[in-house]
Image 1 (cartoon, rainbow, N blue to C red):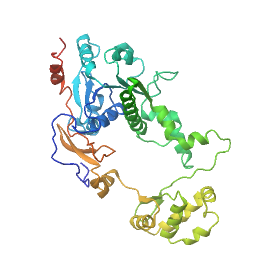
Image 2 (cartoon, one colour):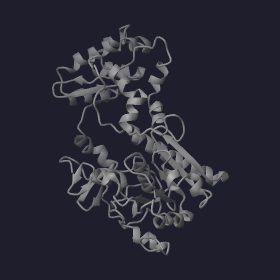
Image 3 (tube, one colour):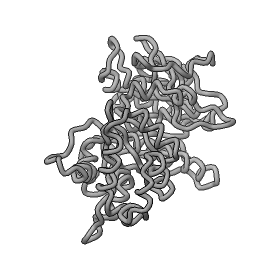
Image 4 (tube, helix red, strand yellow):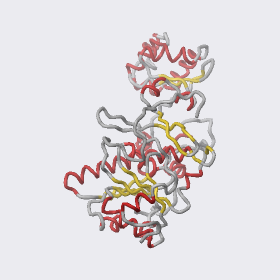
Length: 397
């Protein structure tokens, strides 16, 4: 656990291996074939909202179970993505194990998978295959490029899609000092795909409730990256794109801050907070279009003001005046802020290595309960329970 982290979300609620009883998705049953990141985070959100999520793992287990960071033999990253689910181990190529899926399907509301397109056909697990057993099934597929088209069969993870979407070269172009794309380990496409899949599933469930029947939700990481690159998608269609507004880190005596005077009111607050009221009369900055065209000059003025001050003093002056501003923090520092504690944004979960923090659900309800469940399932932990419900024994019957 980070040294400075505040432990939050430690209420004495029921921690049995069951779904939340008064969640907005309570009573929903999800069969989750996904592994790695995008699919598992989507199904974790479904579990946070009260759905019973049954995670189907191959005999070797989800690859993420052995992914860093490890505590002993347990992956905190796996727990982050999979807390609150039930786990059943099945070899989907074994007819007796495959029969378990067929037996489960009448009770399943949602199926989630992130196989490469074509795999579900080989396994007999397509939307058409499974809706024959549950006609109003909501079935969600998450993939790099979508289920059809010339790129559908290409393997992809988030870093591949970041590069292919134009994201990485766009970011490189915003820093003239760079001669190559910046190394990173961002998983933005995965998390965005997960949240879009969550939204798509919920929309399909409402459509079903309104009499529209089941549906197949097809989520592509590439489509989502283009959604995120809204400014870049628009400027890519212009012969003479405008000079972009770049929010640069501004160095202080003891660190860095970032300032975002986007609106006119923000800019006026910045000038007052920095005690540079002359900026309000400067034709280069006083109105939005000239300010955008002279953004680098304004940034230089802010940097000169901040250079002899500590980051906290800069943030207090500018934020108090009403302009968005923060200092750069480490992840551990961010986790330890009073706001994170106030919102229970971090919550303890437990696996065989002990307790540690994961982010809680990123949305809160006033009346319903939405919260990460506190257990991380062992591989196959719930196999016997689920098979007993089906009057089956391990290995099929």
